[in-house]
Length: 302
Image 1 (cartoon, rainbow, N blue to C red):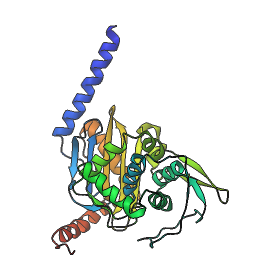
Image 2: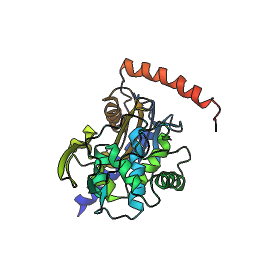
Image 3: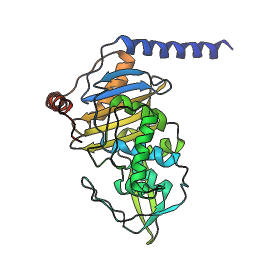
């Protein structure tokens, strides 16, 4: 009887020690220009780097898209048609999906999350009660409900740089999204074959976050994003020192930088070591920070 008690006490000690170390240790060096991390169970920020700066978030947007779809209560088994776009995509919207074909709503949501399929995210919005504009309005209403005061959405895909949020706000979004089993499952699917109808064909999709493929990370929610204006972005929930940790990494330099930052945060929680980032990443941040300062000081035009 004593052994399970001792193991539990040891686990509690390690968790408490990790939290205390995070509160006192200097923040880790990160390649991401804006970042935040928090424990999933309480949402308390463990680190914040420009966490209240409003920036483009690219396809991280699709987490809110998924939240609105699921909270609408619409059937995930319903077949939805891929309509032609009623407005041009703000950026390159290449897709292998054929206009006029159909797919289950649940499968659309899966490939939008795991593989960042933009046409799928767009189509989910088109089939929302009230249509596309009502869907975008619901995204903003949900953001307000969650207390995401630095967030605004203009489209459901993330192709528009007008979708803006903060690292701190995205922690709130991830905590809310993680309450849905479908988002956890769909966003961490490693591979998936979608079966389309009208006509019948299949397409294979893979996850855009390489850490999903590594069991040692225990990733239970994930979303990547990229736009020129947003840089490389990654939000996820993963196991660090026995606890689920929300990691938000925005505007990273290079495709591998968010993964490197996630590793530095994980090691920082364990050892308190700050780690190092490449010189090119530091130069990128030095270039980006003045741009944000200029944008913040520019009066809004209505």
